[in-house]
Length: 265
Image (cartoon, rainbow, N blue to C red):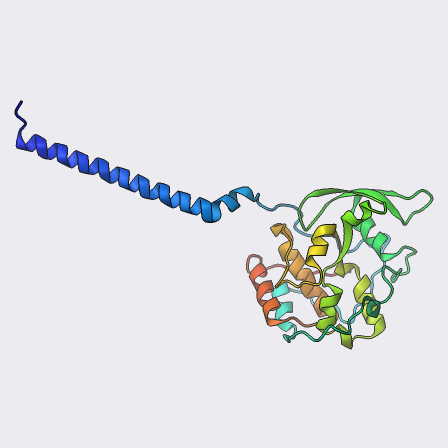
């Protein structure tokens, strides 16, 4: 059978087009596999963080405010951040928790210690110990750092699952100005509701004395509030930030430039 030259050329052209399509498909497939095995599998495995966008601060119905060294400046957290001093860390070899007073005192003198004040503020469906209007026995809450719902039950082991986090860790505060505060001012810093959030125990342990440059909540939806709260606490107690810490805070606030400072009043 005789095949014309024009038919032969058409067949060659269709063959080249087919091979071209196959080549594009192969490159796309290789690119997809490369993305999956480098970053995609982690993005697919990690669900988008969700949860509270802020945490409670103050309930005037039964809490009394703790007076800070300075009022929290009104306005944006970015403006307040720019007003904070930027310095390096001071030494911490002389740090002790006792420098901030006995843990969980009744600083606001409302008849209940600070830990139970914060549990009552942050939890819902609160149940008190029998015969008490202060000691929280149980409750539930939408935990802010992980964005998960948590049941709290008082007990020697179960209580550890929910801890009260110092938003500005006391060890961090000690290295960034708290050594220059009076004993009474440090006690206020450690018990100020502005600086306290009920949180997942393991997350709080992981944070330790970290600042925004070394630790941020896994729940991304609360990071703007969290960083604004740290800035507000540092402004209220005359503490400074490091350059790395300020850069980290600015990166977070870049997604929420209108985020306001946070006040306990």
